[in-house]
Figure 1: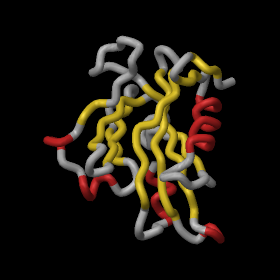
Figure 2: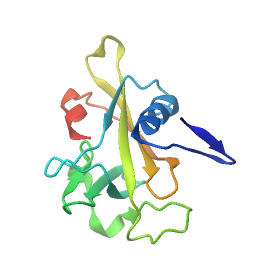
Figure 3: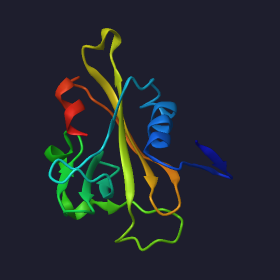
Figure 4: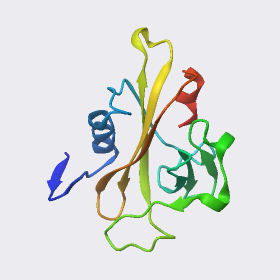
Length: 148
């Protein structure tokens, strides 16, 4: 269950994160599809998150096996010199903060393309639900659903 914690919301599990992602939307549009991030190598669901808000890129780092994965088409625009680390305000160590991550997708009418995506997270330590970034998907490529 999502709870109000003053200026932010908290969730107890990944189901709360999915509900939060749906409620937040993507670039002002409704979210129609949500993908809970899971490591393709080990199945882990706890990650560090790096990205560049200006270039609208994000990469998740699996805490179980160390695997890295660019979210959607982020790898095409990735520049290691311009990225930051997502942190929570619960005073965790910025290099070790752990998140569950969900990507919400807004689809065009008829469901024949992706309009926008949004990356949301839940801090594993304190449960805080957060919003990393969102951006438009000009090409509409549906294969990006599988690249969360």
